[in-house]
Amino acid sequence: MDLSVLRERINDIDDQMVRLFVERMQVAAEIAGTKAEKNLPVLDLRREQAVLQKVMENAGEEFEIYAHKLYQTLFDVSKSYQSGILARETDLSREIKANLENPKFEFPRKAVVACQGVEGSFASRACDRIFGMPSKMFFSNFESVFQAVESGLCKYGVLPIENSSAGSVTEVYDLMAKHKFYIVKSLKLHINHALLAKPGVKLEDVHEIISHSQALQQCSNFLKAHPGIKVTIFENTATAAKYVAESDRTDIAALSSTDCAKLYGLHVLMDGMQNNENNYTRFICITKEMELFAGSNKISLMLSVDHRPGSLHELIGKFACRGINLCKLESRPIPGKDFEFRFYFDLDGSVFSPEMIMVLKDIEQAAESLSFLGCYSEV
Image (cartoon, rainbow, N blue to C red):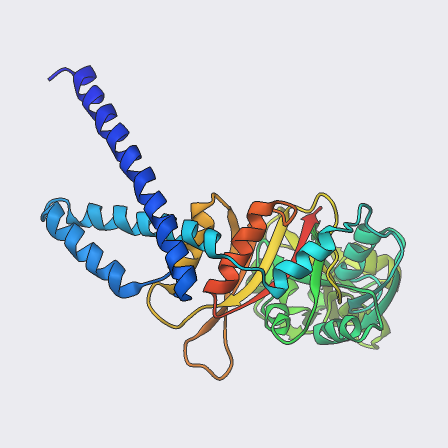
């Protein structure tokens, strides 16, 4: 048969399918209204399973798997539409809308900011890039940064969240579940590692290298090529450089930045130590209260779902139905629960869009728990 004739038949079938789809969605809206009157949930798992079984039987053995996939997608779209109709105002949606009434238009250039490490750290450099003229307070660990912000000691805090080579900073992700905060900005900072030692020390003199675990991972190729050199983890790259400068030893070196070499009077034995020249660390800037700045286009969420098959798929489907791009999904185990996980989502979008508010209300009702970590811009 001629191809144009076949395509015309497909067009006729598509027209019928679209009309039936619209009719089905209109009936779904009526069902949503009835569910609202009777205070029933959107999801009726037994009903879905019964419909899927019938659809597969009607489709026959050759097409049953395709019919199953088609109707699963149709269910996701229908539930998303129903949820939009049934979505009620929540504490989160009310808080976001209250902040939207008085959005901020300019990010502050001056503020008291908590950073982990000492002067010269990459977090310190990120802080300078984000604020311009910050008053920095340094803390020995990541949790102290969260605590400084939560207690009001510092207005903001700057923390590393992930590296393009070494992956996520899992300690920071785990601390997110313990503390109340909001992300107000993020920054991708190019990271260049150098091997620093006292003036006069040569590479063959070095018997121990110290640095943060992320820096050691990012320079793993060099370390593997020198198995005789001891590796010791420090809480911060700048702290490691400071320790080398203050130590009496001449057989020790730090993986740190060239800025720290100048700051602490050290010599650069080797530069560009990282495995990949395209090496970036993403930092987040956090604060205690929600702040929404005009132009924000990224959202971070922390949530958990029911521990049952398909629950995460259903939730992700809510983003897919509305064409929202998920740019990161991170999972971390929930302490005290066997093989149950907490999920962290980064997505492209803004709460300045009414559609996004509706999505968040839908997600909040579907998830077991939801924490809105912020809507912000990335530089």
